[in-house]
Image (cartoon, rainbow, N blue to C red; front, side, top):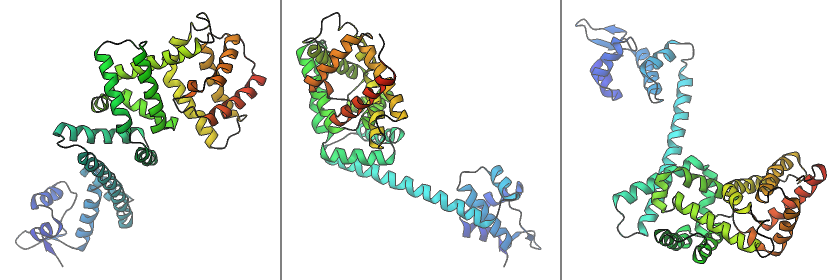
Length: 345
């Protein structure tokens, strides 16, 4: 059976102009012409057109389509397999879009009259999350969110911190230190996994649009970090002299996020079942010890005092994902490390 160009266009959803163009560039030439000069397409032409349409759905240019079809690897089953793969990707994207719309629907139910900017920023935030977290991590975060809603815990704290910033309150102020303690405790409850917490912090640091949506910007994160330093400083000051504390403030502020990443790294090793004496764990603990030494000016007597202080003051271990199990694991590893690589001032 031979089809005229109009019939072929109608059955395939293409325009006559498109088929003319394919003929002009040599991509799809009709096998025959009628006595009146009309283009006629046979079964082989239709099969070739299926190849063309399939490849176009894979976002190939016409030149790339021609290269594939005219080359060696143009078996129909290969093209169909590629179509199936493309459809699988579309399905995955559709599922993700459904999840995003479902989340937006949930948000809309909790807000009376969200404006267009809220809609757009929410969708943008959900798109951003996919840049920093795997799908499994996102699902895990949703489970955590169901147990401890971040908005419920954090919104009042964020508003209170914003008020302090607007009123130029110092991070050394008791009110600032109290809010920093509540912030750290709440985030530890909401996101106990240091891997997620580290990525969540990085996402906030890197994405201004997310800062606008959440109200937590660089200024606020730095303020909370400084106030958290002061909370710890007050505890250490009960046991240490000003001389022994001279390096602490600067080091802790500089390395706060490095500590969170370190806790994440060692926790993953612990979860993988690695012994504290394993070479990979020991390599991580070398970095752990370097951060610790930086905080105390490489002064061994002070560092030994600090370890004893941590035994007495559990509040120093709150935040960043530093759990009791991780502390025990790290201490075992550090004990082994110091036998092979003793501390040096």
